[in-house]
Image (cartoon, rainbow, N blue to C red; front, side, top):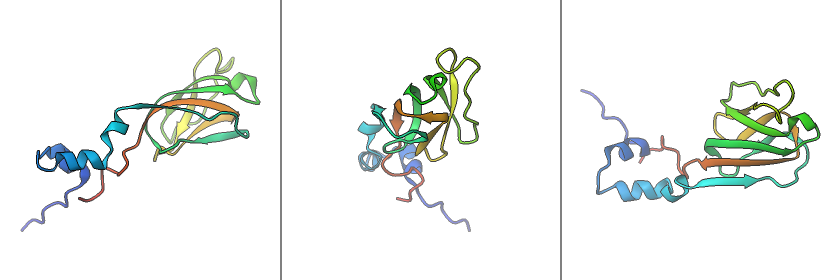
Length: 133
């Protein structure tokens, strides 16, 4: 005898049962998921890691506007949590740098300290898709 799998938010969304779909979409706050968020840290104390409000499901772009290190100013490719933050030869103002994004999408880390960053991203669902329903 097999034990049926415990339904999760993800499995129920995939099933797309019209009787439950509206409730599932409400749980993940679908409207928030469909909107690109833009977060400007404003001037912050020099830090290499920046906390992403609400966490990120996906980061579209990361732009360091100001930094104590002039070569750090510019655009960065958001890598995964195992990426090593990297400043390209000549600096991020001449080529794209690499930033590391935490596995849970909570922070993005740059190779040097930054004092203002603009991020464009898709916010994480309000409830994890692995949550049992």
